[in-house]
Length: 314
Length: 294
Picture 1: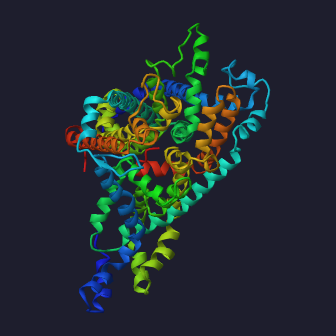
Picture 2: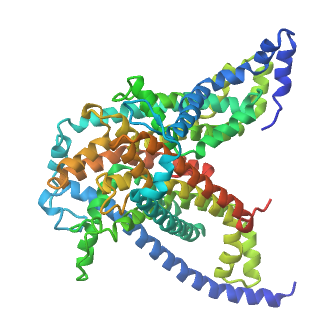
Picture 3: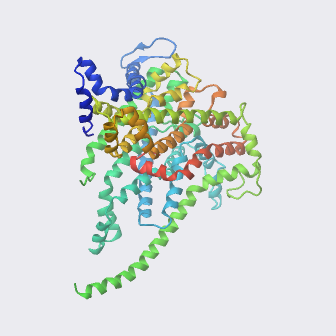
C-alpha cells in the first residue's frame, strides 16, 4: 500500500480551509463513498451479527421468546453433558486429520508428475480439476450415495473379483471414509496451486543438482519440497479450514441425520440440527464460537510452527 | 574445458534419454489410469441417466444398451413442482448475485487499491480478517434479522448480502488485480480533471475485464452450488433452487427412481460444466494466483 496518490489529493484538500470535518471529508470522502456498501455489510452482516451471536451463546434462545441469560451453561453442557457434541468433534477431527493430508499428498504428487513439461499437461490438469469444481454440488453427493451403496458401483466392481462389499454408506465403520474419499477426489484445486508454485522454482537449481549427480528423489527431497513449503503451508491452512466447515456431502449422504450412529455427524451438521431442527439458537451460537476458536487455534498453531518448517527465501 | 568430460556426459545423456523415456511412459500410464478412475463415476452417472431404468443397477459399464431419455422427463416432473421452476430460481439468484458482487466488490476494491483515506489499512485488515471467519458465527443473528425483515422464503437473504460485498474474497481478488494496473493511467486522468468515479468507471473497470469475468464465473458456480443458504432460507417448494430440488428428490422418491434422480443431477451440473469448458483458463488462473479453495 503506497501513499503516492497522497500528493494529488493534497492539492484538492489545499483549496479550501474550512472546518475540520469538511476538510476530513474532502480528503477522505471519496474513499468512504466507495466503501459504503462494504461498510454497511461489514457492520450489518458481519461484525454486528458476530457480536450478537457471542451474546446469544450465553443465553437460551428459541426464536419465539426473548433470549434468557444462562451464563456459561451452554459451554459447560457442551464439554460435560453432550455426547453428540463429543461425537461430532470426533467425526470432524478424524475427517480433517485424514482427508487433508491425503488430499494434499495426491495434489502434490500429481502436480510434481505434471510439472516436467509433460505432454498433454492442459488435458490432465483439466481432468484432475473437474471434480473439485463439481464436487460441492448436491448432485455429486447424490452420486456418492449411489457409488457406495450396497448395490452401488463400487460393489459392482468388487463383485468382479468375487468380493461382496458392505453397504459402505450405512455401515458406521466405513461411512466417514466415503466422505474422506469424496474430499480426496477433489484434490484438483490444491494441485493447481502446487503447479503454480512449482513453476516458481528456477530450473537451473535442478540442472545444478543433476550435474552434481543428485538423484530425482534427492532433488525432490532437497529442492522441490523445501522451496514448496510456503505453498504447502498455504494449502494446508486453507484446506483444513474448509474441512472443518464441510457440510453438504454429509447432509445429503446421511439424509441430514449425521448417521449411521452419528458416524458422519460433522460439526456443522450438528450445529445446523441444533439451530434449525431443534431451534436451540443459543446453544448453536455457542457451537459456532467454539468452531471459530478451533479454526483460530489451528491457524495460529500453523503460523507459529511455520517458522520451523516453512522456507521463505526472499 | 577439455573434451573428455564432455564426451562422457554425452554417453550418459544417451542412457538418460532411455531411462527418461521409460519414466515418462510410466508416468503417463499412471496419470491416464488416475484420470479414468476419477472420471468414471461422472461418466457412469451420465450413462445411468440415459439408459433404461432397469439397467442402472445391473451394469457398471458406461455404455448403455439403448439410449432412453425418459428419465429426464420423469425427473423433470418428478416432484410436485417441476425442475423448470428450480432452474429458473437458481438462475435468478445466481444472476443477481453476480451483479451484486461485481458492483459492490469492485467499488470496495477500488477504494482499497487506489484511493487514499484515513483508516484504509485498518479497514483493509478487517476485510482480510472476515475472509477467515467461518460464516456460522454470523448465521443465527443474520437469520433473526432476515426473519424480522420478513425476508425468509424470499431470495433476498441470498442476494442482498452480495450487494453489500459480503463475499470479501472477491474484494481481495480485485484489489490484487487493480494494483497491477499502472497508476500512471489514473494519475494522468486526475491531471485532466477526472474524479474518482470517472476513473473507476472509465479506466479501472474497462481494464479489469479478466478479473471481473473471473469473479462473475466463480460467483455463478458458488451460488449455483450453494446448498446451505437456500436450505435455511427457502422453505416453500416454489422458491426452491436446483440443489434443494435434488435434495427433495432424494428424500421423496430416490429409492424408486434413480434414473430420474441421476438425470436431474446431471442436468444440475451442466451450467458449471459449461463454465469449465469455456472459461477453464480464467478459472485456473484465478485459483493459481489467489489460492481459492475450489
